[in-house]
Image (tube, rainbow, N blue to C red):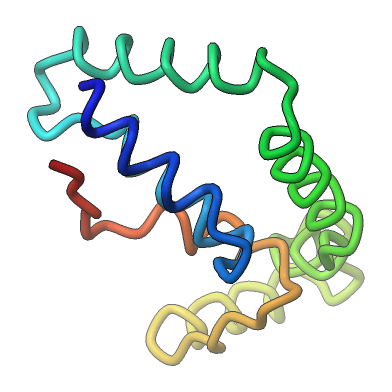
Length: 128
């Protein structure tokens, strides 16, 4: 686990990597190779917690970048796309969702959905 964490730190220290990609690497580090092995996940989470508790330059930069990303994200567009604040009515929302199920709009970089869709992709990034 220690070697795997060192590889993660190398990626997190790289200023050329966008914050979404850094989040993807953190999630891949935590994600277990075997879903039944919760021990490895808990150990990986503890590494991440300890890392952010240091409050050094790298952790501050990552935290600031995440905060800025959330502040600048287009969360209102996602709230309306989920129908939470929709004025279009049930029939329109139903047809829009059905259409988007088969021909979804591509994610846009500043979109709140993009922020979470990118790190939580189904394929796994493996360290080790």
